[in-house]
Amino acid sequence: MAIPKPEMERFSLLSLKAALILVFLVHFTVAHNVKRHGGAGDGVQPLSKIQIHKTIDATHENASVRAYPVLLGTTGKEYEWVTVNVVSPNPSSDDWLGVFSPAKFNASTCPYTEDYYEPYLCSAPIKYKYANYSNANYNKTGKTILKFRLINQRADFAFALFSGGLSSPKLVAISNAIVFANPKAPLYPRLALAKNWDEMTVTWTSGYDISEAVPFVEWGLKGEAQVRSPAGTLTFPRGSMCAEPARTVGWRDPGFFHTSFLKNLWPNSKYTYKLGHRLYNGSYIWSKSYAFTAPPYPGQNSLQRIIVFGDMGKAERDGSNEYADYQPGSLNTTDSLIKDLDNFDIVFHIGDMPYANGYLSQWDQFTSQVEPIASAVPYMVASGNHERDTPNTGGFYDTNDSGGECGVPAETMFFVPADNRAKFWYQADYGMFHFCIADTEHDWREGSEQYKFIEKCLAAADRNKQPWLIFAGHRVLGYSSNSWYGEEGSFEEPMGRDDMQKLWQRYKVDIAFYGHVHNYERICPIYQNQCVNSELSHYSGTVNGTIHVVVGGGGSHLSKFSTLKTVWSVYQDLDFGYTKLTAFNHSYLLFEYMKSSDGKVYDSFTISRDYRDVLACVHDGCEPTTLAT
Image (cartoon, rainbow, N blue to C red; front, side, top):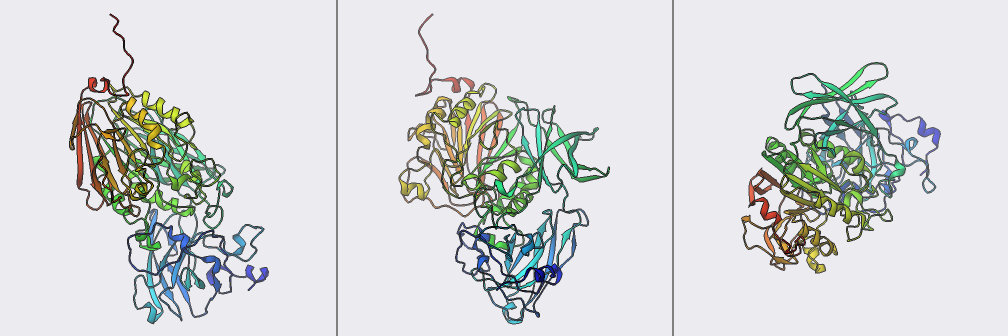
């Protein structure tokens, strides 16, 4: 059914009742079984389940969708709860309501393509909810009230009612538009360590390009005079996406990302800051105020507490997108960390962040979710397969786990102190800790560019001043009892352990962390598949093997363990959680694994040793010596 373009132009958003043919360029779809409550999880991006390319017009004059309040964020909040009244003359249990942003999603907003012509819808909803989500009687009455929690995403919003489920959707009605009072406001600050120990970076998102406003951070020691530091601005276009759906239905304008470097920090001192934009008419736009504590000097002897986890994902607090089936533990982990915010100093999220999988709107949702954490402590990230992997884009894996993002959103929206952010490997110093973060989505094998970096990073640790040497990467390069690794007979990423273990041993890495596998597992101190220490809760003396830890239970659907019992596995937990390292001094380290559900410790061990224990000669880790006198 075709609609003449002049007819299309007469429709306003507020009263769109005409027929639309909605064509989505979706490369993959998944059949859906309607459920009102979360299950065990299928690991499929919920937005990819909507087969909108099959949508037909079913707009009905007696159907209506009304959303209020119309103006959001009038008190300065970056989120708002919205009430949506739905009326349908022909209700069904598979009716659903999609949230679209920008609100104008008719054919006039779509770019021309050779394959699809007007009219068609060219952007996915940013979230959806079944019409009977909050009212089981909707099927009989055709009336319901739904609550949505919207965050400021630089554009207005509209709600569309569909029948026919996700597999055969029919457009029934479209709501009025609603918008935030200042949709371009600076939001969601994300702290990160810089290359120099006395610097902190602040990255945030806004709707202001440099042609409209000058970005900066106003900051200083708490209670003292504040200074202003300029910020650089980045963004990325649709053309930088490498495949669908990121190039097609998943695309959404990402806004602008600003990064400022706060320099010459005093160690362990409290700073306050707020984000600013100076408009060219002389007025200012401000964020709310935030605070952080400056990093310790490298080698400084003080209490230092590190959080490490992977694969958290994001979830919706309003229950939309049936995210309980996708990232069921995400909010538990987030909320547990927020509750414990005063008791740790820095976070390492080692890959698989929002699992946007090419639906760009989800990155805003993720940065909003972690903002209470990332605005207060450095939030360091690593590249995972769901950030980077796209066929024929120079990655180590030729899959489309990123939905065509090919690393662009992650490397643009989060700062890491890498020489090249497209190659997500870097080193970071935090007091007595020296971190070497790998990018497992690029070649790590001996002789590769990354292998040379990892060896240089490990060798750079001054173990007298920084005794705690930590390696981390997304995929398991060491050991895991995960079921799919077990089926392959590898119990780790093929080729990972073969090339990397000689470096871990030579430089006496204390702990190696991994995500990718969605569970928790601790491995004994190990080298060449042999446990080198029979202790379970306390390790002391010579560093003769590396402890490997899988901590991929940050929130995504869980991964089962192999039925084969591996001799090197010390502790396994099929649940959501995260780990914490506490360095009390140069000689004593506490490791803890906490469940996200209650924040309690379920596995722990301690390490105690002197500097000479690190220097001691071990198998494949000895410096050459002579008997000369």
